[in-house]
Image 1 (cartoon, protein in one colour):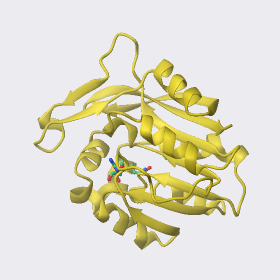
Image 2 (cartoon, protein in one colour):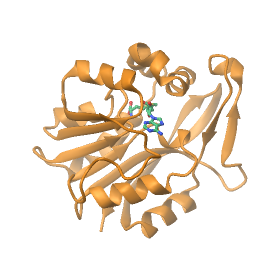
Image 3 (tube, rainbow, N blue to C red):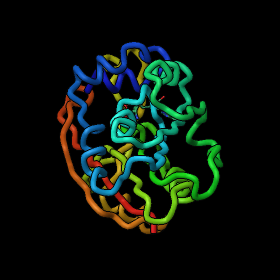
Length: 212
Ligand SMILES: C[S@@+](CC[C@H](N)C(=O)[O-])C[C@H]1O[C@@H](n2cnc3c(N)ncnc32)[C@H](O)[C@@H]1O
């Protein structure tokens, strides 16, 4: 996971090595997101991957017959994703820049995996996901879990992230549930899992919700 976070912090610099690093880091969020979504998806449907990176998560949906669309601000990560040749359309776009370049109700589903810990305010992402996903579509994402006693933001030691300090953000279950209900999603499933992050065992949660 240390390696995964390094890759995330400097996505452009690590794009070519990202998949190998994620495998070595035993980062299983893509498989958990796909597994929890499996009962609700159908071949031929569309899915938007917010922060698609090299496509580790959405490639699984493509194998199940879904049409994958992706957004990421790193052109190098998108280049790696393009080499895999499974996505219908990939757009370079910053998730903090609104609106996203997709029409209202244009996608059946959306996912965002390994991205929320890099973004302080995820509210706009939830609102854009709700605008873009059709009614009854899924929104599934992985977030770094925060217990009540912990701070939202955490400085990552420069020694473990390639020389430069950076901040990661965690989300409490209460905050996530409140964001989901205020943006029009109904929570279907959540699974907590652990990964080693910055040298420490760290809790993450995958949430699967339905657009109402
Ligand atoms: C840890 S990677 C995860 C990639 C992919 N979702 C996966 O499941 O393997 C995080 C990705 O989020 C992208 N990202 C981070 N912040 C972003 C932002 N504000 N706008 C767009 N993409 C962002 C990075 O470029 C990187 O590709």
